[in-house]
Each structure stands twice: as C-alpha cells, then as structure tokens.
Amino acid sequence: MTNIKLNQDEIIAEVEEQDGLDEDRTIGPQDEGDDDPADTTPAEAEELSDEGGEMLKEERERRQQVS
Image (cartoon, rainbow, N blue to C red; front, top):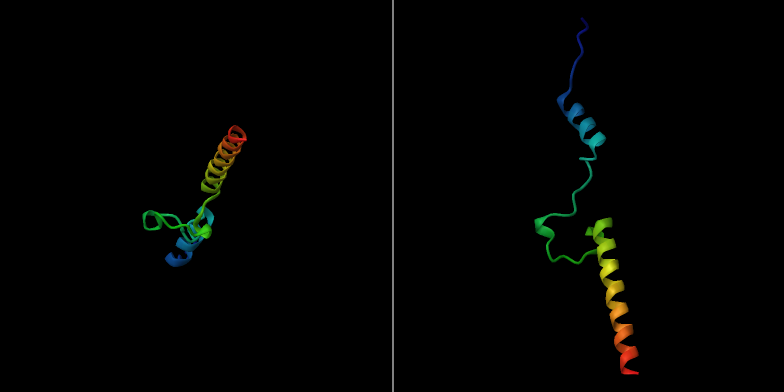
C-alpha cells in the first residue's frame, strides 16, 4: 500500500471544477426582480424571447384590425 498525501482543499477544488460548482452562481432568490441581462440563464432568455415574440405578434394583429 502506498502512502498518498491528500490535500482536502485541492480535492474539493477539483471536484467542484469537475461538477461545475466552482462557477459563480448568478441566479437565486436574491435576484428576484433583477433585470440585469448578465443574470439571465439561457432558458430564461429563451422564455423572454418567446414572450417578446408573442407580444409582437399580438401587436401586429391589433394594428391590422385597426387599419
């Protein structure tokens, strides 16, 4: 059996890096209502894009009915 020195901090850092846990977390309860685009996840961006597309579609339909 070989003696291997284990450095707990190095192991934790390596596991966090492998699991993507070392990345800054930008979304959480403290961010509710924050409109900073840097805090927007890809899923949220897609949802906002879909909502914006629906709003544009409704506005175009409304303008066509008025004309």
